[in-house]
Image 1: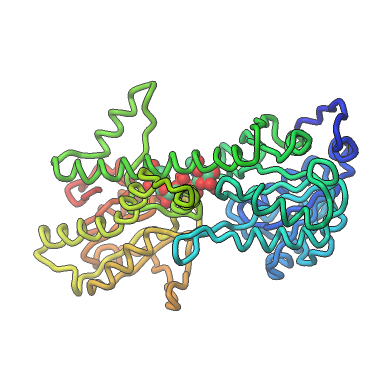
Image 2 (image 1 turned 180 degrees about the horizontal axis):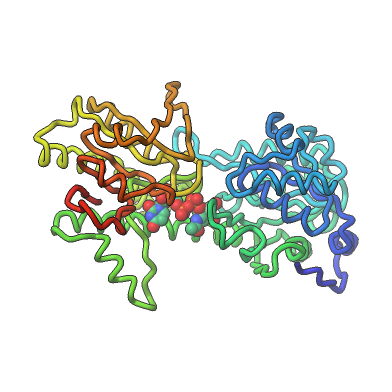
Length: 446
Ligand code: SAJ
């Protein structure tokens, strides 16, 4: 916990003093997988945190000491609330008491695959109505370069206040990796970029109180671009390795063997793994914020679009492979076959299903006439396209009676040997069965 004191310079000296002595009232708008962990860390180091959320149910749940986020347990919320350092509210009028405001709201894509910054605008307009002199506003939501300066700054200056003098505005990308117990909000280095040097300094000192390693960049646009590079790097490399999987299939090679062997190279290589597609609310989406912005500058971001194309076709490829497996092994067509899908969350060991490719695979299988059951220990039920689905109990009877089991999310708590022992055939899109010793002849992999 960095409680470094700073030579108080510039227009933000009063704010910095309040941040360092913890008398600053801290506001967090959006209490999801980013805002809630941030609130926990800020409360932990002694700030009085007010969490703002439009969901009254979420506000009620948090104030009663319970969590709806995978990475934050009820005990942490209960402790934070009991300490008196946190309360949740839907009343945006309380923003007028805040000395710092962190905006952690969703930035999805619209139906036409354009950035949807409506959540950011909704939050910023509430801040504009209530912001007081000397406040630090930091946007954390992933967005295209220019959002903070071109969209948010003019709205906040409608208050008549001057940025860098009367209030401070910066961008600091969230880097939460849901389900990652090693790297959490409090030990993941942070990038900050302000509209003015005084804004950058205020943001740097604010985050230093909870995170030891803060890296300042020259502008809000630079900070916005850093995050998009991080996530585009992942999307493009996942797209590459998904295409390598398609190549290996045609070459009669085992893509998992190839990647594991390449990963023995101690430098200049970083393993990514093929899968049924790209899920989550970040990796499939954030790169399109960047390509959208570049289109407005008459530049076509080819890598982003190509990776998006490959990644979004993986569900179809998985269904093609299942179809040929049923055909080859049992002379069965997909139509009227029975399939058990294991895992619907978008990645292992979490319950989040946003943009999960498992849903696309299940829909494609059903569209081709298969009877699909699913099991996911993290997702007991879900509703999709107005249809409710319920996780089937993972019994020997079910596993042994379906024509094929497809592994879509490699949750660690599955007994993969037991599954293979009892299944007629297994299509493994995650290499989850790599440690399975017996009956490997039943397994096909991406
Ligand atoms: N995936 C693959 N192959 C891989 C890695 C991932 O198919 O080699 C798939 C996953 O199954 C998942 C999707 O890609 O469906 C996204 O996976 P992810 O590991 O990037 O997970 P996210 O989106 O939950 O979190 C990411 C963060 N992950 C990591 O850095 C490991 C990080 O990029 C961001 O902090 C976060 O998105 C965000 O909020 O932007």
